Image (cartoon, rainbow, N blue to C red; front, side, top):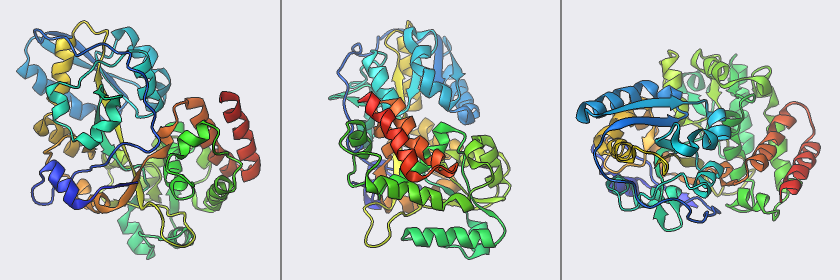
Length: 427
Protein backbone atom coordinates (compact mmCIF):
# COMPACT_ATOMS: atom_id res chain seq x y z
CA UNK A 1 0.00 0.00 0.00
CA UNK A 2 1.16 3.49 -0.77
CA UNK A 3 0.01 6.62 0.97
CA UNK A 4 1.13 10.04 -0.27
CA UNK A 5 0.71 12.33 2.71
CA UNK A 6 0.64 16.11 2.54
CA UNK A 7 3.39 16.29 5.16
CA UNK A 8 5.55 13.87 3.20
CA UNK A 9 4.92 15.68 -0.06
CA UNK A 10 5.96 18.97 1.49
CA UNK A 11 9.10 17.52 2.96
CA UNK A 12 10.08 15.85 -0.30
CA UNK A 13 9.41 18.65 -2.69
CA UNK A 14 10.06 21.81 -0.69
CA UNK A 15 6.82 23.42 -1.76
CA UNK A 16 5.88 27.00 -1.10
CA UNK A 17 2.30 28.25 -0.69
CA UNK A 18 -0.21 26.16 -2.58
CA UNK A 19 2.29 24.40 -4.86
CA UNK A 20 1.95 20.65 -4.63
CA UNK A 21 3.79 17.51 -5.60
CA UNK A 22 3.28 13.77 -5.69
CA UNK A 23 5.24 11.11 -3.86
CA UNK A 24 5.01 7.36 -3.49
CA UNK A 25 7.05 4.21 -3.37
CA UNK A 26 7.91 1.20 -5.45
CA UNK A 27 4.95 -0.62 -6.98
CA UNK A 28 3.76 -3.80 -5.25
CA UNK A 29 4.72 -7.05 -6.83
CA UNK A 30 7.27 -5.63 -9.26
CA UNK A 31 10.03 -7.82 -10.58
CA UNK A 32 13.55 -6.82 -11.43
CA UNK A 33 15.35 -7.75 -14.62
CA UNK A 34 19.01 -8.74 -14.56
CA UNK A 35 21.50 -5.93 -15.13
CA UNK A 36 22.57 -6.08 -18.75
CA UNK A 37 23.16 -2.44 -19.67
CA UNK A 38 26.40 -0.54 -19.97
CA UNK A 39 28.06 1.48 -17.23
CA UNK A 40 27.58 5.19 -16.68
CA UNK A 41 27.15 7.56 -19.62
CA UNK A 42 30.22 8.71 -21.52
CA UNK A 43 31.65 12.09 -20.63
CA UNK A 44 33.00 14.70 -22.98
CA UNK A 45 31.99 17.71 -25.02
CA UNK A 46 28.26 18.41 -25.18
CA UNK A 47 27.90 18.46 -28.95
CA UNK A 48 25.99 16.68 -31.68
CA UNK A 49 22.44 15.88 -32.70
CA UNK A 50 20.30 14.29 -29.98
CA UNK A 51 17.13 12.38 -30.81
CA UNK A 52 14.59 12.38 -27.97
CA UNK A 53 12.11 9.51 -28.44
CA UNK A 54 8.79 9.43 -26.57
CA UNK A 55 5.01 9.17 -27.00
CA UNK A 56 3.72 12.40 -25.44
CA UNK A 57 2.65 14.29 -28.55
CA UNK A 58 0.53 16.56 -26.38
CA UNK A 59 3.74 17.77 -24.69
CA UNK A 60 5.51 18.70 -27.92
CA UNK A 61 5.11 22.47 -27.57
CA UNK A 62 6.40 22.48 -24.00
CA UNK A 63 9.34 20.28 -24.94
CA UNK A 64 10.02 22.54 -27.95
CA UNK A 65 10.49 25.49 -25.61
CA UNK A 66 12.70 23.47 -23.28
CA UNK A 67 14.75 22.34 -26.29
CA UNK A 68 15.19 25.96 -27.36
CA UNK A 69 16.46 26.84 -23.89
CA UNK A 70 18.78 23.84 -23.86
CA UNK A 71 20.23 24.67 -27.27
CA UNK A 72 20.77 28.30 -26.25
CA UNK A 73 22.80 27.03 -23.28
CA UNK A 74 24.62 24.43 -25.40
CA UNK A 75 25.30 25.98 -28.82
CA UNK A 76 26.99 22.88 -30.22
CA UNK A 77 23.97 20.65 -29.65
CA UNK A 78 20.62 20.17 -31.35
CA UNK A 79 17.68 18.14 -29.99
CA UNK A 80 14.83 16.76 -32.08
CA UNK A 81 11.73 15.00 -30.84
CA UNK A 82 10.85 11.61 -32.34
CA UNK A 83 7.25 11.14 -31.23
CA UNK A 84 5.09 8.04 -31.72
CA UNK A 85 1.56 7.35 -30.56
CA UNK A 86 1.39 5.66 -27.16
CA UNK A 87 0.16 2.40 -28.70
CA UNK A 88 2.91 2.35 -31.34
CA UNK A 89 5.57 3.27 -28.80
CA UNK A 90 4.41 0.56 -26.42
CA UNK A 91 4.48 -2.04 -29.18
CA UNK A 92 7.48 -0.89 -31.23
CA UNK A 93 9.54 1.38 -28.99
CA UNK A 94 12.28 -1.17 -28.38
CA UNK A 95 12.73 -1.85 -32.09
CA UNK A 96 12.83 1.88 -32.84
CA UNK A 97 15.35 2.77 -30.15
CA UNK A 98 17.62 -0.29 -30.39
CA UNK A 99 20.92 0.79 -31.95
CA UNK A 100 20.10 4.48 -31.35
CA UNK A 101 19.00 5.28 -34.89
CA UNK A 102 16.55 7.35 -32.87
CA UNK A 103 16.32 7.81 -29.13
CA UNK A 104 19.72 8.94 -27.88
CA UNK A 105 17.54 10.00 -24.97
CA UNK A 106 14.20 8.25 -24.56
CA UNK A 107 11.34 7.43 -22.22
CA UNK A 108 9.62 4.15 -21.42
CA UNK A 109 6.40 3.08 -19.78
CA UNK A 110 6.68 1.49 -16.36
CA UNK A 111 6.16 -2.26 -16.47
CA UNK A 112 6.83 -4.59 -19.39
CA UNK A 113 8.46 -1.97 -21.61
CA UNK A 114 10.89 -0.84 -18.89
CA UNK A 115 11.75 -4.50 -18.26
CA UNK A 116 12.28 -5.21 -21.96
CA UNK A 117 14.55 -2.18 -22.44
CA UNK A 118 16.60 -3.34 -19.47
CA UNK A 119 16.94 -6.87 -20.79
CA UNK A 120 18.02 -5.51 -24.17
CA UNK A 121 20.74 -3.39 -22.54
CA UNK A 122 19.30 -0.10 -23.85
CA UNK A 123 19.46 1.81 -20.56
CA UNK A 124 22.70 3.33 -19.27
CA UNK A 125 23.48 3.30 -15.55
CA UNK A 126 22.58 6.74 -14.16
CA UNK A 127 23.10 5.94 -10.49
CA UNK A 128 25.92 8.41 -9.92
CA UNK A 129 24.67 11.19 -12.18
CA UNK A 130 23.60 14.66 -11.11
CA UNK A 131 20.22 14.04 -12.74
CA UNK A 132 19.42 11.09 -10.48
CA UNK A 133 20.18 13.17 -7.40
CA UNK A 134 17.37 15.57 -8.36
CA UNK A 135 14.65 12.94 -7.86
CA UNK A 136 13.02 11.71 -4.67
CA UNK A 137 14.42 8.37 -3.57
CA UNK A 138 11.02 6.71 -3.28
CA UNK A 139 9.90 7.60 -6.78
CA UNK A 140 13.25 6.58 -8.24
CA UNK A 141 12.33 3.00 -7.37
CA UNK A 142 10.27 2.82 -10.57
CA UNK A 143 13.48 3.42 -12.56
CA UNK A 144 15.74 0.96 -10.76
CA UNK A 145 17.24 -2.23 -12.09
CA UNK A 146 18.38 -4.04 -8.98
CA UNK A 147 20.28 -1.47 -6.93
CA UNK A 148 21.14 0.68 -9.95
CA UNK A 149 19.20 3.69 -11.19
CA UNK A 150 18.93 3.24 -14.95
CA UNK A 151 15.87 5.40 -15.61
CA UNK A 152 14.33 8.54 -14.15
CA UNK A 153 10.51 8.39 -13.74
CA UNK A 154 9.67 11.93 -14.81
CA UNK A 155 5.89 11.88 -14.42
CA UNK A 156 3.58 11.11 -11.53
CA UNK A 157 0.05 10.69 -12.85
CA UNK A 158 -3.35 9.66 -11.53
CA UNK A 159 -4.95 7.19 -13.99
CA UNK A 160 -8.47 7.95 -12.74
CA UNK A 161 -11.46 9.58 -14.48
CA UNK A 162 -11.46 13.34 -14.87
CA UNK A 163 -14.68 14.99 -13.70
CA UNK A 164 -16.38 18.17 -14.97
CA UNK A 165 -17.26 19.89 -11.70
CA UNK A 166 -19.84 22.18 -13.32
CA UNK A 167 -21.81 19.21 -14.67
CA UNK A 168 -21.51 17.42 -11.34
CA UNK A 169 -22.86 20.48 -9.53
CA UNK A 170 -25.71 20.89 -12.01
CA UNK A 171 -26.73 17.24 -11.57
CA UNK A 172 -26.20 17.21 -7.81
CA UNK A 173 -23.92 14.21 -8.41
CA UNK A 174 -21.69 12.76 -5.71
CA UNK A 175 -18.00 13.36 -6.48
CA UNK A 176 -16.80 11.17 -3.60
CA UNK A 177 -18.67 7.83 -3.78
CA UNK A 178 -17.74 5.40 -1.01
CA UNK A 179 -19.28 2.26 -2.53
CA UNK A 180 -20.12 0.84 -5.95
CA UNK A 181 -23.80 1.60 -5.43
CA UNK A 182 -22.93 5.21 -4.66
CA UNK A 183 -20.84 5.45 -7.82
CA UNK A 184 -23.73 4.06 -9.87
CA UNK A 185 -25.91 6.64 -8.14
CA UNK A 186 -23.50 9.34 -9.33
CA UNK A 187 -23.87 8.01 -12.87
CA UNK A 188 -27.67 7.94 -12.54
CA UNK A 189 -27.73 11.57 -11.41
CA UNK A 190 -25.57 12.66 -14.34
CA UNK A 191 -27.61 10.70 -16.86
CA UNK A 192 -30.84 12.16 -15.51
CA UNK A 193 -29.41 15.65 -16.00
CA UNK A 194 -29.08 15.00 -19.74
CA UNK A 195 -25.37 14.25 -20.17
CA UNK A 196 -23.34 11.13 -20.86
CA UNK A 197 -21.93 10.11 -17.48
CA UNK A 198 -18.68 8.51 -18.73
CA UNK A 199 -16.69 9.00 -21.91
CA UNK A 200 -14.56 5.87 -22.27
CA UNK A 201 -12.09 5.31 -25.16
CA UNK A 202 -12.70 1.58 -25.36
CA UNK A 203 -11.27 1.44 -28.87
CA UNK A 204 -7.85 2.58 -27.64
CA UNK A 205 -5.99 -0.13 -25.72
CA UNK A 206 -3.55 2.18 -23.97
CA UNK A 207 -6.10 4.71 -22.76
CA UNK A 208 -9.13 2.47 -22.41
CA UNK A 209 -7.18 0.23 -20.07
CA UNK A 210 -6.60 2.95 -17.49
CA UNK A 211 -10.05 2.42 -15.95
CA UNK A 212 -8.92 -1.14 -15.20
CA UNK A 213 -6.58 0.29 -12.52
CA UNK A 214 -9.57 1.71 -10.64
CA UNK A 215 -11.81 -1.30 -11.13
CA UNK A 216 -9.36 -3.95 -9.94
CA UNK A 217 -7.49 -2.50 -6.93
CA UNK A 218 -10.25 -3.00 -4.36
CA UNK A 219 -11.67 -6.14 -5.95
CA UNK A 220 -8.37 -8.01 -6.02
CA UNK A 221 -7.40 -10.07 -2.97
CA UNK A 222 -3.73 -8.97 -3.17
CA UNK A 223 -1.85 -5.81 -4.11
CA UNK A 224 0.43 -7.57 -6.62
CA UNK A 225 -2.59 -8.78 -8.57
CA UNK A 226 -1.05 -8.38 -12.04
CA UNK A 227 2.02 -10.35 -11.06
CA UNK A 228 -0.02 -13.16 -9.53
CA UNK A 229 -2.33 -13.42 -12.56
CA UNK A 230 0.72 -13.61 -14.80
CA UNK A 231 2.27 -16.33 -12.62
CA UNK A 232 -0.93 -18.37 -12.55
CA UNK A 233 -1.50 -17.90 -8.82
CA UNK A 234 -4.76 -16.03 -9.49
CA UNK A 235 -7.26 -16.93 -12.21
CA UNK A 236 -9.52 -14.67 -14.24
CA UNK A 237 -12.26 -17.18 -13.54
CA UNK A 238 -11.99 -16.52 -9.80
CA UNK A 239 -15.09 -15.04 -8.17
CA UNK A 240 -13.47 -11.66 -7.44
CA UNK A 241 -12.52 -11.14 -11.11
CA UNK A 242 -15.98 -12.15 -12.32
CA UNK A 243 -17.44 -9.67 -9.83
CA UNK A 244 -15.28 -6.91 -11.32
CA UNK A 245 -16.48 -7.78 -14.82
CA UNK A 246 -20.07 -7.66 -13.57
CA UNK A 247 -19.35 -4.12 -12.40
CA UNK A 248 -18.06 -3.26 -15.87
CA UNK A 249 -21.38 -4.57 -17.18
CA UNK A 250 -23.15 -2.20 -14.77
CA UNK A 251 -21.46 0.71 -16.56
CA UNK A 252 -22.93 -0.03 -20.01
CA UNK A 253 -25.95 2.32 -19.66
CA UNK A 254 -23.65 5.15 -18.61
CA UNK A 255 -21.14 5.05 -21.48
CA UNK A 256 -21.31 6.87 -24.80
CA UNK A 257 -22.66 4.97 -27.84
CA UNK A 258 -20.13 2.61 -29.45
CA UNK A 259 -17.87 2.95 -26.43
CA UNK A 260 -15.76 -0.08 -27.36
CA UNK A 261 -15.04 1.48 -30.77
CA UNK A 262 -14.28 4.99 -29.55
CA UNK A 263 -10.73 6.29 -30.04
CA UNK A 264 -9.19 8.59 -27.48
CA UNK A 265 -9.64 11.83 -29.47
CA UNK A 266 -13.45 11.55 -29.78
CA UNK A 267 -13.62 10.54 -26.12
CA UNK A 268 -11.70 13.68 -25.17
CA UNK A 269 -14.00 15.77 -27.35
CA UNK A 270 -17.15 14.42 -25.66
CA UNK A 271 -15.69 15.56 -22.36
CA UNK A 272 -14.24 18.88 -23.55
CA UNK A 273 -17.56 19.82 -25.20
CA UNK A 274 -19.42 18.98 -21.97
CA UNK A 275 -21.41 16.19 -23.56
CA UNK A 276 -19.89 13.80 -21.00
CA UNK A 277 -19.28 14.48 -17.32
CA UNK A 278 -16.31 12.12 -16.89
CA UNK A 279 -13.35 11.16 -19.07
CA UNK A 280 -12.18 7.70 -18.00
CA UNK A 281 -8.46 8.08 -18.73
CA UNK A 282 -6.43 10.09 -16.24
CA UNK A 283 -4.78 13.30 -15.12
CA UNK A 284 -2.32 13.03 -18.01
CA UNK A 285 -5.10 14.25 -20.33
CA UNK A 286 -5.79 17.53 -18.53
CA UNK A 287 -3.64 19.57 -20.90
CA UNK A 288 -5.15 17.90 -23.98
CA UNK A 289 -8.66 18.70 -22.79
CA UNK A 290 -7.68 22.31 -22.03
CA UNK A 291 -6.21 22.58 -25.52
CA UNK A 292 -9.61 21.55 -26.89
CA UNK A 293 -11.11 24.64 -25.25
CA UNK A 294 -12.40 23.23 -21.98
CA UNK A 295 -12.66 26.05 -19.43
CA UNK A 296 -14.68 24.29 -16.73
CA UNK A 297 -13.15 23.24 -13.37
CA UNK A 298 -11.91 19.66 -13.24
CA UNK A 299 -11.04 17.19 -10.54
CA UNK A 300 -10.49 13.44 -10.31
CA UNK A 301 -13.04 10.86 -9.23
CA UNK A 302 -12.37 7.31 -8.07
CA UNK A 303 -15.00 4.71 -9.06
CA UNK A 304 -15.06 2.97 -5.69
CA UNK A 305 -15.89 -0.69 -6.28
CA UNK A 306 -16.39 -1.89 -2.70
CA UNK A 307 -19.86 -2.82 -1.53
CA UNK A 308 -19.29 -2.31 2.19
CA UNK A 309 -16.60 -1.75 4.77
CA UNK A 310 -13.41 0.26 4.47
CA UNK A 311 -11.67 -0.03 1.08
CA UNK A 312 -7.96 -0.76 0.84
CA UNK A 313 -7.38 2.16 -1.52
CA UNK A 314 -8.92 5.55 -2.25
CA UNK A 315 -7.30 6.01 -5.64
CA UNK A 316 -4.46 5.02 -7.97
CA UNK A 317 -1.30 6.69 -9.24
CA UNK A 318 1.60 5.82 -11.51
CA UNK A 319 5.27 6.80 -11.82
CA UNK A 320 6.13 6.62 -15.51
CA UNK A 321 7.73 8.33 -18.53
CA UNK A 322 11.00 6.83 -17.36
CA UNK A 323 13.82 8.87 -18.93
CA UNK A 324 16.99 7.14 -20.05
CA UNK A 325 20.19 7.54 -22.05
CA UNK A 326 20.73 5.03 -24.84
CA UNK A 327 23.75 2.79 -24.27
CA UNK A 328 24.32 2.65 -28.07
CA UNK A 329 24.25 6.43 -28.59
CA UNK A 330 27.35 8.08 -30.04
CA UNK A 331 26.33 11.42 -28.51
CA UNK A 332 25.94 10.24 -24.92
CA UNK A 333 27.42 13.39 -23.32
CA UNK A 334 24.83 15.54 -25.09
CA UNK A 335 21.99 13.09 -24.40
CA UNK A 336 22.94 13.02 -20.72
CA UNK A 337 23.10 16.81 -20.66
CA UNK A 338 19.54 16.93 -22.03
CA UNK A 339 18.30 14.55 -19.33
CA UNK A 340 20.19 16.64 -16.73
CA UNK A 341 18.52 19.76 -18.09
CA UNK A 342 15.02 18.27 -17.84
CA UNK A 343 15.75 17.14 -14.29
CA UNK A 344 16.51 20.53 -12.75
CA UNK A 345 13.70 21.95 -10.58
CA UNK A 346 13.37 25.04 -12.78
CA UNK A 347 12.89 23.10 -16.01
CA UNK A 348 10.83 20.36 -14.39
CA UNK A 349 8.55 23.10 -13.01
CA UNK A 350 8.13 24.54 -16.50
CA UNK A 351 7.28 21.10 -17.85
CA UNK A 352 4.87 20.30 -15.02
CA UNK A 353 2.90 23.54 -15.16
CA UNK A 354 2.86 23.61 -18.95
CA UNK A 355 1.56 20.06 -19.28
CA UNK A 356 -0.51 19.75 -16.08
CA UNK A 357 1.66 16.80 -15.03
CA UNK A 358 3.08 16.22 -11.59
CA UNK A 359 6.74 15.26 -11.74
CA UNK A 360 9.11 13.27 -9.54
CA UNK A 361 11.81 15.95 -9.38
CA UNK A 362 12.44 17.49 -5.96
CA UNK A 363 11.87 21.18 -5.29
CA UNK A 364 9.26 21.78 -8.00
CA UNK A 365 6.80 24.66 -7.57
CA UNK A 366 3.35 23.92 -8.98
CA UNK A 367 1.41 26.98 -10.13
CA UNK A 368 -0.98 25.27 -12.56
CA UNK A 369 -4.53 25.65 -11.16
CA UNK A 370 -5.51 22.11 -12.15
CA UNK A 371 -2.53 20.65 -10.30
CA UNK A 372 -3.38 22.79 -7.29
CA UNK A 373 -7.01 21.65 -7.30
CA UNK A 374 -5.92 18.02 -7.30
CA UNK A 375 -3.60 18.43 -4.30
CA UNK A 376 -6.00 16.60 -1.93
CA UNK A 377 -5.30 13.37 -3.81
CA UNK A 378 -1.77 13.55 -2.48
CA UNK A 379 -3.16 12.89 1.01
CA UNK A 380 -5.13 9.81 0.07
CA UNK A 381 -4.22 6.15 0.27
CA UNK A 382 -3.39 5.38 -3.34
CA UNK A 383 -2.20 2.21 -5.09
CA UNK A 384 0.54 2.14 -7.69
CA UNK A 385 -1.35 1.42 -10.92
CA UNK A 386 -1.63 -2.39 -11.16
CA UNK A 387 -1.95 -2.69 -14.94
CA UNK A 388 1.76 -1.92 -15.14
CA UNK A 389 2.67 -4.90 -12.98
CA UNK A 390 2.28 -7.14 -16.00
CA UNK A 391 5.61 -8.01 -17.60
CA UNK A 392 4.02 -9.77 -20.60
CA UNK A 393 2.07 -7.37 -22.80
CA UNK A 394 0.05 -10.19 -24.38
CA UNK A 395 -1.17 -11.22 -20.94
CA UNK A 396 -2.03 -7.66 -19.97
CA UNK A 397 -3.94 -7.10 -23.19
CA UNK A 398 -5.89 -10.32 -22.74
CA UNK A 399 -6.80 -9.47 -19.16
CA UNK A 400 -7.93 -5.95 -20.00
CA UNK A 401 -9.78 -7.10 -23.10
CA UNK A 402 -12.23 -8.90 -20.84
CA UNK A 403 -13.73 -5.51 -19.98
CA UNK A 404 -14.16 -4.57 -23.64
CA UNK A 405 -15.70 -7.95 -24.32
CA UNK A 406 -18.22 -7.58 -21.50
CA UNK A 407 -19.19 -4.07 -22.56
CA UNK A 408 -19.69 -5.45 -26.08
CA UNK A 409 -22.21 -7.95 -24.69
CA UNK A 410 -20.24 -11.06 -23.76
CA UNK A 411 -21.06 -12.57 -20.38
CA UNK A 412 -18.45 -11.99 -17.65
CA UNK A 413 -17.89 -15.75 -17.30
CA UNK A 414 -17.34 -16.27 -21.01
CA UNK A 415 -15.02 -13.27 -21.29
CA UNK A 416 -12.97 -14.47 -18.32
CA UNK A 417 -12.69 -18.04 -19.59
CA UNK A 418 -11.52 -16.91 -23.04
CA UNK A 419 -8.88 -14.62 -21.58
CA UNK A 420 -7.68 -17.22 -19.07
CA UNK A 421 -6.90 -19.58 -21.97
CA UNK A 422 -4.57 -16.94 -23.41
CA UNK A 423 -2.93 -16.40 -20.01
CA UNK A 424 -2.46 -20.16 -19.58
CA UNK A 425 -0.75 -20.34 -22.97
CA UNK A 426 1.78 -17.73 -21.86
CA UNK A 427 2.63 -19.34 -18.52
